[in-house]
Length: 432
Image 1 (cartoon, one colour):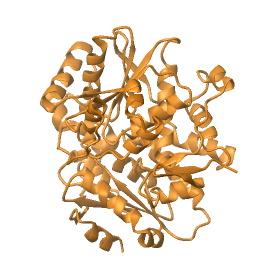
Image 2 (cartoon, rainbow, N blue to C red):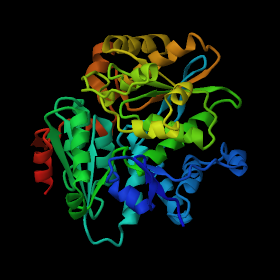
Image 3 (spheres, rainbow, N blue to C red):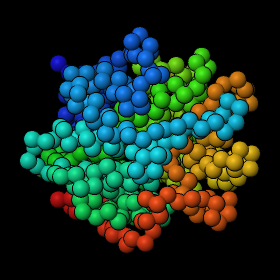
């Protein structure tokens, strides 16, 4: 029997990989977790520094999905999905940036979206029904999913994004592909978009009839490939150093993937959850009270999340214990003024161009280093700076940012989006 998955709300109920991936969200509104999280063996650690990035990814996912996908099929999926690098760039003494924006949509979401598209294709190749992929985005997820699924036969993708709360070029990535990609411009916040997606899955009749699946990090298939680059970053550092990962966080899929990597055996001294003023998780770490609230718009828009869905998985990975989580993780919060200052500071002191989310990470890394100067800091740089052109040019001057051609070519394309109120009834009626 292959790896099974359970809901965080029903630990005794198990499903196979196909249901966990294609249904995305359990009926009890929990999140799927693997029944067993394997510890990587001595053979892995004797070779992990020598493998290609794609082979490293395969060696990580193989025991997690053991028995659920044929080995050669799985290796091929990872090889096709992870065909770009995630280089570690040194910007100061024991201060590094992990660049996760070298994929087709220029954001870290490419890792999960590209793998998931291939896995879903394999899981449904005999199914005559069309698969409808729902995705809520605060910026980069939608672009990565749209890119990964564009023109994939047998799929329709519906991207929900908050009106006026993603950057212009991010919006063009969602709204200009056409074909099997439909963009819904929701009058509300990212949390509203995420709530609408969850409502569709909890309407089991609709979910079955439209063959719904999700491409958000609520989907375990999106999350697992994000573990790859934590291992890849660690092997680019000198052996024996204490590694601290600084993770700019919104919906907390990225940090959850890091926690999963540590459970599999990756040596990590500390995780730092770096947020903007949407600081629900740092507040929880300090008080022990988890209090979701309405999100606030900031210049680091992908982190504008007031009810991070992966919090349930983070709790699960720490045995539902607040004290255990605070031993493994600290949280820092910074506002827009501090973020803008950090963008300028990094450029002046290191000549590196860091975008707003990475800048929040940089601030957290500097704060941690005050008491821990010997730690190797790795800041996740989650998207290309050109995606936030207005902010970057306001801080660094016009023309300071090179726009890659695959993004620049979108600027003149016409936006096509369907206006959608934030009411569940309206969205469900539209889906029907």
